[in-house]
Amino acid sequence: MIKNSYHLNTKLTGLIGHPIKHTYSPFIHNISFELKKLDYIYLPFDIPIASLKTALKGMVALGLKGFNVTIPHKENILQHLNNVSDEASIIGAVNTVVNDLGKLTGYNTDVNGVYETLLPYKDEIINNEVSVVGAGGAARAVIYTLIRFFKPSKIFLVNRTEQRAEALKNYFYDKMKYDSFKTQELFPPDLVDVFKNSKLIINATSIGMYPESDDTITTLSNSFGKDQIVFDLVYNPPKTQLLKIAASQGATILDGLKMLVNQAAKSFELWTGEEMPTDRVQKSLQLYIQD
Image: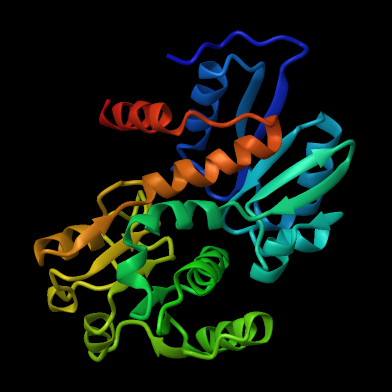
């Protein structure tokens, strides 16, 4: 159980996004602070798009040590920061901010989350085709991580509008000189062929997230096979409709919880200088969700 005893010296951290009712981040960070006996607290702040700039001034005024950034602010926040890490600058999205005496520096720890989740499958991914669904901030972190660490032979960018996928393809060609892209509009029948030819399929959208848990990027079970890896960044619910369909066809499935904990671990380190006890946090999170 997380204690609720705080005092004037307690250091504040938190999360900004909209909506954020689905988030497990307060549990992850607060249990981590307790396990490490650190005098910190992590709070969620529901911030609409129009209030972002004002909210950041509030974060500074309140003296937060740092905060996480989620949908829909990951890209828009860059223009309001004093500094941005090289990695976050290339990606074009920030999910973690450190406040140093009023100077805000942005980082992208989603890279750490994606990397740690996919690392056991690195040999299977290298030189194989991969499909990434989405064209937002999370997709940018996924694509960056794949290009830098996993060297797929081709990345299919799948999005509701092919125009945004094309823009993302051009963006990463300019930033990283990776030219093995193909774009695809989401939902047409030939999406089955795109997925079938992919060793790894990653959902980097919020489709299927609570409370719209019945939604999925595809209902076509013949899109998947037993030799595939299907990774859904959605973590609430942990087993999305997409993962259920893929598992029914024998695919290896990866939920968003491990990524969530591993990206949180990097944020935790940036704010506190300490390592998060990820194994204990993961087990605690599983128990929390089951309750």
